[in-house]
Length: 341
Ligand code: KG4
Ligand code: ZN
Image (cartoon, rainbow, N blue to C red):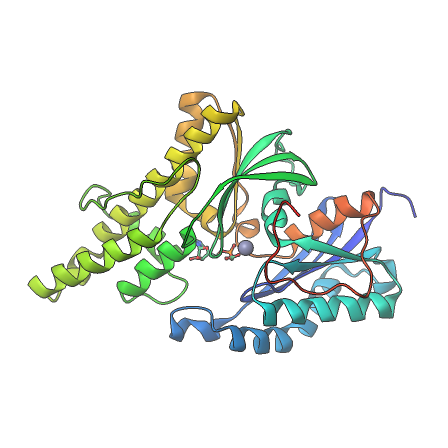
């Protein structure tokens, strides 16, 4: 086999999406994602239910990803799987499945850090320009908020991160306070489009350096809503778009301020965003505007590669394959896994 036709089967199961993808080199041939509806009624991911749903979904999802491309299993060069970080029960399903399949097919196994996947998703070949090293990546998801200096495919330095809640939690918890179902981020984004971002103001946290804090914002929103609904029980219904626009505006300002600081500190003007929250239209627009204003080169992933997906695991797998970075059957899932390890 030449290095020019590498086929990676990738598996992602770190949180509440079961996903499998097949890549031919850096091109995605299939990327199947099964979302778990079961968590909607609980206002957040229930780990036990997530593991069970992964168990139900994993075989049909992998089968589907392979069938879509019509590639026989024998052609697979290696299996890449999300080792962590994430929910242990969820990770164990994907990890065990990947190990068994690799053993059955007699192909190498590749460990992938989920957050590295969110960052390297920019290297999936879609005909778009790719970031040049070194670049800054802001990873914003339901579990993480980090600013990372990406030196190359395998060397990443965390310059700053959240000290408490992730930015996705700020969106989802605000949505919960407003009575919206989980995950609330996309709904806040939707309603914000019709609202006035300056209708209400929320104080922003003062955090050192490039670190973030979002737990205070959640509490500020909660107290604000409690006070306003005491005065007017219909306050949420009558002001939903303005509340969403104002909270989103506050979050966008917090993120963009830190990005500006990171550019100043490092002198790097190549900026990529990644993770589920990078699907947010307010964040995407603000980044484009700042990029134009300050001459940054900005990289925004396609929607399908923002939220959790196996294609991003596959692209990391591809670059690791080229470097023979394989693991063995002793490998196990890691709920905590740093980008710097
Ligand atoms: O990366 P991801 O799919 O899973 C994690 O690794 O956490 O991110 C999920 C997060 C959720 O908090 C969800 O509400 C948020 O991404 N999200 C959004 C949008 N789309 C997804 N937040 C704001 N605006 C959106 N359009
Ligand atoms: Zn993620």
